[in-house]
Image (cartoon, rainbow, N blue to C red; front, side, top):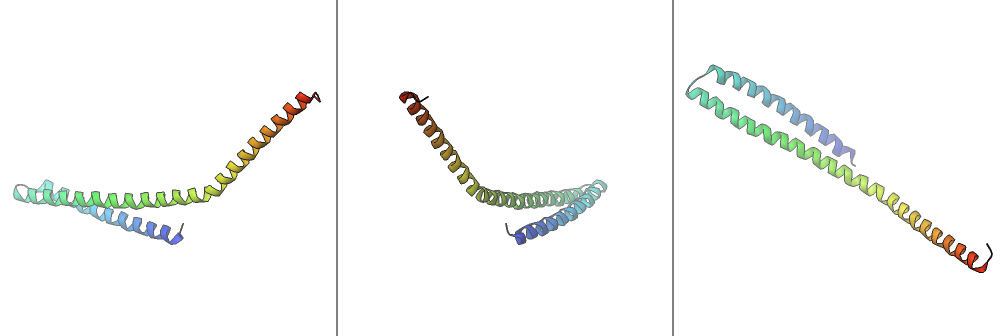
Amino acid sequence: MDPKADTRLTELSARLDKTHADLTHKLDELYQLREASDGEQWREYESQIRALKEQEIRLLKSKNTAWMAHWLRTDGEVEVVDAPHRTLGIILIGISIIGAVGLGILWWYLQSTGSL
């Protein structure tokens, strides 16, 4: 995996966290203003809160998508690294099976000739 990709992902995650913290702070302020208001002003604050909540959801989805892509890419590379080991394991299993069959044939031959 490219170390630059990890760094970029970490930087992106940090920026998204900062943006989320700023967004949360704005939401808290709007909640307080909404509680202190009434009538048309209350509806305006409610509309702003709804818009910020939608923005927050998109922000969290973006962060989640970035990390999911990172994990999938990492898992894919682990799979590629493990492939030669898997091939070696299958070859060793094949050799073991051939050896066991050979020993079985040798035992059968020795038993049938009366050498045992």
